[in-house]
Image (tube, rainbow, N blue to C red; front, side, top):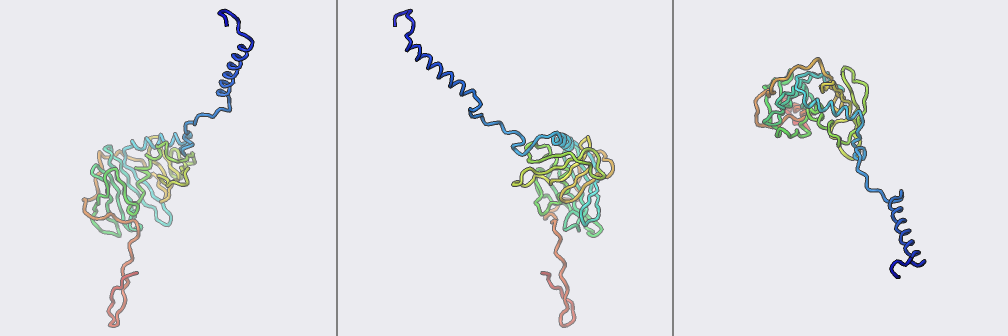
Length: 273
């Protein structure tokens, strides 16, 4: 082609075809039929749906972790007389929960406590067990009791508030009517994952605006705040000296041997089965 000469019809046709094809590619790439990028997982996709009720409960549970107080709770459970649980959370991070009938199938009083030296389970004297109080160190301060030695009553007060503030936990939260005797806001907490063990007991949790747990209805029973909390001491003290040994088991102790009568008429103990 000479300089300045107009393109021939065939050349113009070829150029138009290239432009048309390129335009079609651009339109196709921007159209609704193009594969969408993988969406960012939402909280509900991970089992942790962020509802207003869950956000409110998370805020109250966060305040609960900053509360320093001494308080009493009434513990009600099926087929058991009501008991009074004592709870202290000190400013230095130590805490202690005294649980009447908390071990040996309800026949022994125990305390669970955490200090800077570790996690302890303590045997307490009671009307039925006239013993001096002693404590056994069971774990480091951030450790846990073994399931067979764990009365669980301390968890709504000291460990499960951390779970309630975890936005990734597979929990569903709904505002509900207050438990009888509680005050503040109450929430029903359910697990949203059938394949995983819930990190806390599902049930109902009630908090005052300052983060005080005023009620909890969970697997082991119902806790209701009894009276007004008071200021906590600077640190908690163990109820007795630390000794070597094993923590008290939660199961009932075996029955004592049944005496039998020998041919001579003298009773002799017979080991139980």
